[in-house]
Image 1 (cartoon, rainbow, N blue to C red):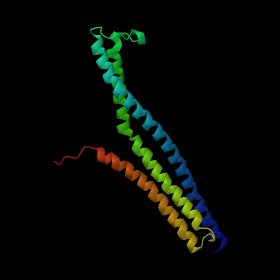
Image 2: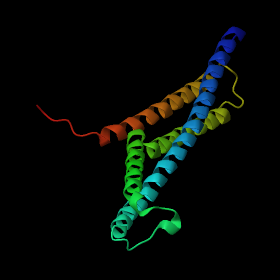
Image 3: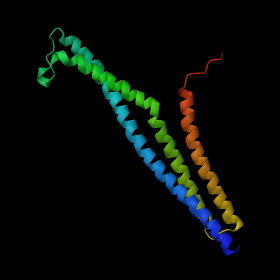
Image 4: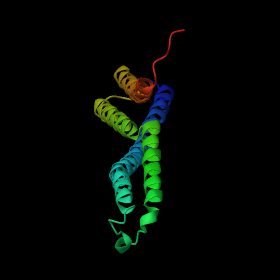
Length: 173
């Protein structure tokens, strides 16, 4: 293999490895954002789902002045408004969870990043002792390219499959 071809192969390798590093950064950020939003929206829904009925029940009980919430700093006549605000927060948080599918995005990004880490490690191990541009080296670079493309494709397919599975069935005309 002449020096010119080796340099060309080295450029291709650098471009691919840069793509892998960039993809790993993207998935690392995506996992973090999806995890935070998934936990936040789930917590809002869980806590709000407990508080909303409790404030409604307490408001109904205080209409006969049986329960005095002034010790907590809550005027009895504002419980209906509090119930409404809590219910709206729960509905909005649940809407965001369903629209953005944070838990599925988190899992999908984790799986894709693991596939990329594995592909990178396998490639790094496989090229030891192989000269740049040799048929064995080129074969390993091509395997890495296929694994990178496969990981990205799998990520997209999993996300859009979940979107499709949640969509209402199409009606036949």
